[in-house]
Length: 290
Image (cartoon, rainbow, N blue to C red):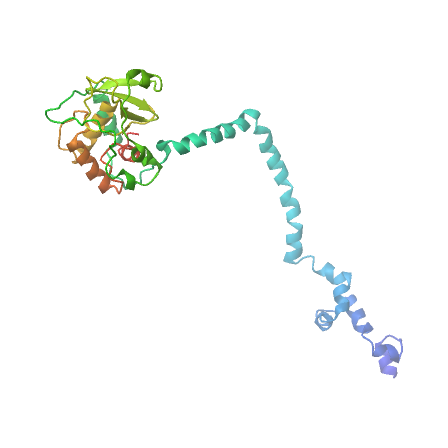
């Protein structure tokens, strides 16, 4: 009993059987050997000093790191906030207001892939400069005129998918007098022997505007974009571009005749476009002319 009492620092035999001396040894930090022995015991886990020894660990460092890291964040946000003036705040609302128009406009629908075959930009510019004053002339001997048919529909248009072809799917010719056209459309022009009216990026044959001047090489809308260039000029530009790429073999006459429509089908098919045989928004975009 005496040796046991000496090891327990004179605390008696009843204390020898208790784990108190072991806990006392760990609390005094007597080496790393004593710590694993009491690690399974719940008592050291509740003590404050083992928590203090965990301060250098990565978890304690990570816990301390967010405090300085988050301090600059409010200041960075605060530095950006003063730059948002009322005028800048109004810009997104203006963009949002323009979004529905862009969504319904065919202009924003088509983005040609990098692999699309298209004339060089300088070539397109040269073509446009050459045709600045271009005016088509009726050529019924070479390009026969089409006749008015109230039940006419563009062949195959019911299979053309996408909003950029809706104009062609829904198109049907109507005959009205000039007062009717002027009451609804701001631009009605004589082009290549027939009158056309312009509406939202397209030129349409104005059947009935002048019964003496109804020469139309093809009865379909012609897409020219929001700049409202005359349709014969746009047709001439497309003909010249297709001619340079080997698709069009005819004369640049500004008329959407059979040879022009055949060239359009060839180009559209090669580019993976819907073969419409008309100048539509995707085709004009692929040619770099939209």
